[in-house]
Image (cartoon, rainbow, N blue to C red; front, side, top):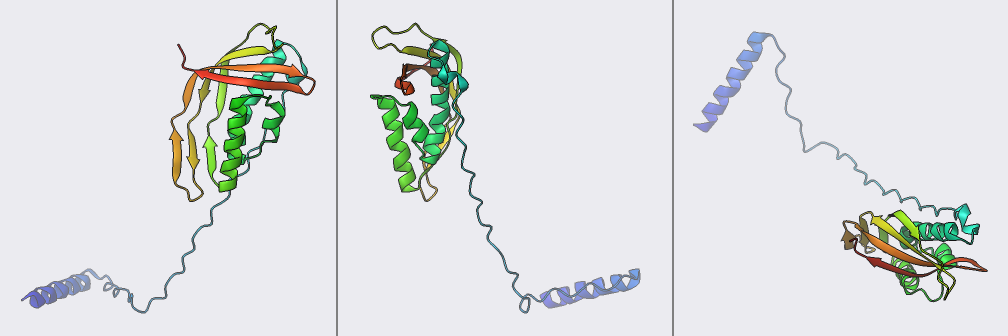
Length: 193
């Protein structure tokens, strides 16, 4: 019964094709004899290595302007150090002791050694205010509002270790001008009021 319905439908199709003057439909492709089409897996393009910014010209100043430049340069280095594992510029501006500086340094080196990756986390400062010179140490505390872009921290196999939506708040960066240039002594982050 099913065969006669199929045969009738096929005959009707042929008759209609013959009546309309169109060529008969092409036979279905033979999938058994078709040569397999080679597929290529695209090779991932390595991400370009981010470039570290040049130290700002104002770092030569020993006053409040130099302190603000040091704070801005320091936060610009943060995501680059974590994403590359290159701590040279970080070490040059980190003071001793600076627990925050040392913690980021350890993290960056550990991540690079394990083949982990970090992206994003760019920090922007606004409403930068350099407070009066601290007579005890001779440095300048720098207060600012900050906004940090979302970041992604991944294991070598690509699995996500940590992903953030970004952050914002108030940061105090203690700076000190030394014979070796500006140094960061401490970083304290708090929520915005």
